[in-house]
Length: 369
Image (cartoon, rainbow, N blue to C red; front, side):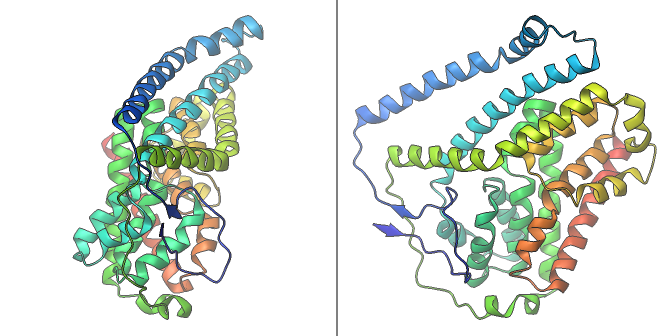
């Protein structure tokens, strides 16, 4: 049995599906693999048949079952909620399961081995890309950060990972694609990666290693990395199912709240109200959106439906992207967690650079789009 050790932070850590604690390979026959492939194809077929009929089902429930008119504000909001709720849950479940299979090949130890010893800019790019495939559960943030630092990975590279992980994770990209189309998803992903790479590079050149908490600096790199590559496909499926259970279990309430807020905006907010202070005609709309977003606490699954409703009501794309990024990447709870690892000067510098990047993205897209 192979054990993956996570550095001790001095606090108890709750079990999380994001980290594979034990790996014990099983024997697997070709017949078993074929069975799983066949089951996967059948499952995807059923998923698509249901997914493609969600709009029709939402309209039927709203009009025929509840007796509401789509032309009314309440009816429009109800249809939005009944359509987006199963849509978001189905997208989230499929994406988390698929990425869970891929993630079973990349334990925290393997990730450390990939990033260690790389040149700084190359490391920033690799770290940002690895962050895309990282779960957004906060229980993994502190152990991964400590593991990266004690493995000798440059501090700026580590920050590129920490920025991209919540901001540009696969859930955000897939939900944006499913709800708003590939163009918005591609813009968001590319700008998120640019912010993560640039901010990490800048932080690395500021040489703020002395701003780590003393107990973090005293940690030393442990023994050789223990990387397992012998998991059977059944092991990986079980890992992916646990990831779905863990992640969906943590965010479902935020998803429903986010969709409910989006439904309210969709049904009740007049277009001219939002366009008046979130339209691209006002230079102050971007900083205002960021200031509103920072105190909020949500993840991609909860905020994407709100973003969809804001765009439908005339809000500018750059302003909405800045709002979404600030909610996901600069939340107060995440800052509290980082305070356990970083001194205040480094936290303020980190937040200032990230917020500055978000503001630049918002202004640029309001100008060009």
